[in-house]
Image (cartoon, rainbow, N blue to C red; front, side):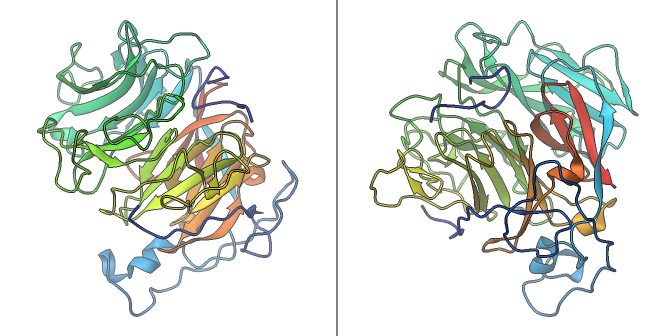
Length: 432
């Protein structure tokens, strides 16, 4: 990476769903038209509309939880535009924070990942003086500006009972990408056990660039892990004998055995391939859809959306950058699944995948995917209707960011947090 933070700063210039790529910029929050239109100037105040009452679920369609159809659950309540929003400072003073997560079902705790190798605990709004976990002696960073470090964290869905969690980091002495299981030190305790349980993945990488770093559990109970392509040329992203440029799917109870439905073959943990640097991905906690933010190279940043259980997808890199042949201007036979949304370099320089909002505080945001960009500091959103990204709205002026987002996170209640790498601050998205 060319800046001192994930996932990357300015650079030199399959089967599954048929997602329509779109380069049209989103409108600013509160604009009259919900469809794609030229964005308002950066930092311009948004004319916010008052929320309307939530509509009852429409009749027909496949049923999901609570008697609503899946289409109902996948879109926001029927409100007049995006509601007023703001960023509320939760905590500050962190050393290069890269992620924040909450143990499932625990409303009192947030854990912040610091790139340098510590997990810091926020308990009932207060940063605890002692780290939850300190792995600085294990973490490899070739230079302060490299992408290596401690990058990812995932808690077991039954963490309250079993205390199991996993971290994603680049390891000493050579920068291999390691995914490791750890455990809580004591029931309800505020510190981890000082030694790891076991290593699930240890792959040669170098940790200079395109490390990936995301870990998350899917609704199927398997752990998903993102590893970038290490910026090699030619890229190993389409090489099914390599874990680089992939999303892996792992059975944490038997990590040597590939879960049914994986690609299989020489690298049986592969779930998706053809990815450049899938720095952040997330699952919609209601629908199970997988949203992937894949960092681009010369011209395009992209968000991919994958229905639950429909992996084994080729996302095209490095024959394709987004929906375009790579390198720019080259002729090619289109390959892979197209992005749901793509942003030209004039809008975004290093995409940060976010979350679909499923919290209770902002009903008119519910069902909307919120994400951002590390280089420009802009925030974007859309609603996935099961086939395409709709109602694209830019949230930058509404959130008025003070910093560059390196990640988003979710707490136990589904509220969304923003991690600012360059200022060391954690914010929560709240009603404005």
